[in-house]
Structures are given as C-alpha cells and as structure tokens.
Image 1 (cartoon, rainbow, N blue to C red):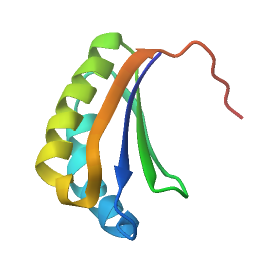
Image 2 (cartoon, helix red, strand yellow):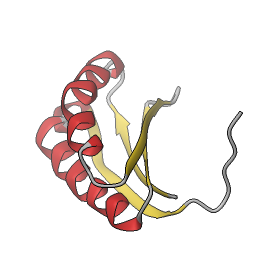
Image 3 (tube, rainbow, N blue to C red):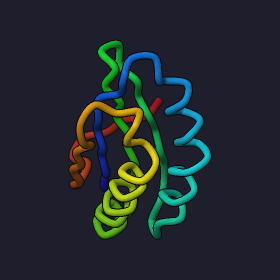
Image 4 (cartoon, rainbow, N blue to C red):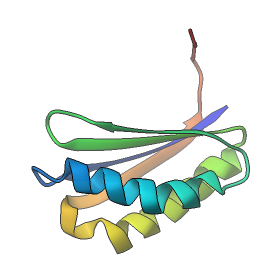
Length: 97
C-alpha cells in the first residue's frame, strides 16, 4: 500500500469553496489513476489542507501527485497561501477498525 500526500495552506474562510472544487475537480482525476484505493482531505484549524490518496502501487501514488499538483496550480491558486507540497511513499503502518 502506498500513499500520496499533498499539503497546502488555505486562505482563511475558504474551506467550503475548497471542498466544492476538490469534490468536482480533484477527485475525478485522482480516482482515475491505476491502483487507486481511497482519498481523504483534512482541513486543520490553522487552515492547513492535507489530501491523502492511497494506492496499491507506488507508480499510482507518484502519478496522483503529478496530476494533483498540476490541478492545484490551475484551480486552487487564488484560494491558497503559497504553493502546495507533495510526497509519496509506502505505508509502513496502518490499521482499520
């Protein structure tokens, strides 16, 4: 199992608009990547937005980050403070209920 993680800082008060844009735009391009398993977005109290995608192969995680960073630049720029960052790698610990 592999995770692709993107993180950015949102402008205050943009959570609702970010969620709408992500649902309509990012989810379709990420879920279309081969090996896709799951997608989560966390909006922290300090306006940090973290998107986590889970894949069954490393190539999928890398491709998701490539697609997502391009999409973020094209669609979320006005709602963010600075650039988004991305990492990908194997999930070394996990559990589920």
